[in-house]
Length: 352
Image (tube, rainbow, N blue to C red; front, side, top):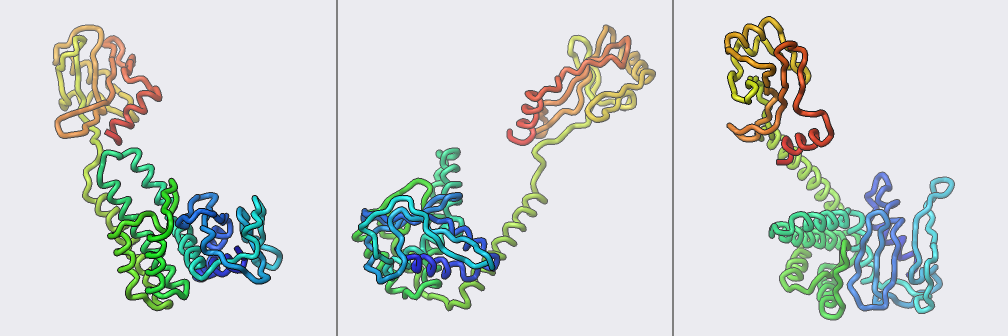
């Protein structure tokens, strides 16, 4: 496959790339030629690649060629000049003096658009969702709809970036569905994933009404800003109307040695005890008066505080201090400050 083919396709799909990020990323793509009559596909996030069938190669003139397994990358030289170089992995004499056909260039642009748009990342994210939520049928439905939308977006991009007509593109879809093998590589985006009649009908029907080149970028720009605005409004709406995941109760609850509740957040107890930074500060005189009025005897009392409520009327978690009646500064906290307790409290607050 000639470097001129690659340079032309990358230049077409990155012509609106102001910061050259997409051009640098696509310059790292490895292109492989397969002898099998398969549908082209692409994959990889950090090491992107594209696999093309040799059916879309034709004899070339004296253009520089790229053999099977050769990697085309883009390198910046002095004066900020962009040069293309080949790194040989595995040569194959059968692919010398070959270049892409017109249909092959369209297919290459289609796969480059998948990589440029980040579709491989979304495919892998949904694969992860299927692992965690395999029991939810909506995950499979959303994944299928997402894949169809990604293919339609790349179909529309091919009509914009190449000179192919809607009729020719539709015929190419039908020809590939009739004659080529389909593959389902994991974590990859393929041009033709299945021969489903409804999927092909939807893709071909979406080709009608090709917009002008000057309108294509404007439409997608406004759609992007519109989706970002809707997402931001949705986040704000959820944050403004949602209930908190948990409520920390300010109540103080006093228990005797037998763990019988004797007082629940009375004004007298509230005046004697304060909670500062998760710890108890006790006024000795007021605490003595409170215990005397409650007629509590023994060596210790238990004071519960900072209780977490997940649902109304039901608590879960919190802290308890065991207070010695002989010395109110002698407090033993029953909740140990360990990472296990911190992790369980985190799960209680945010996950359950």
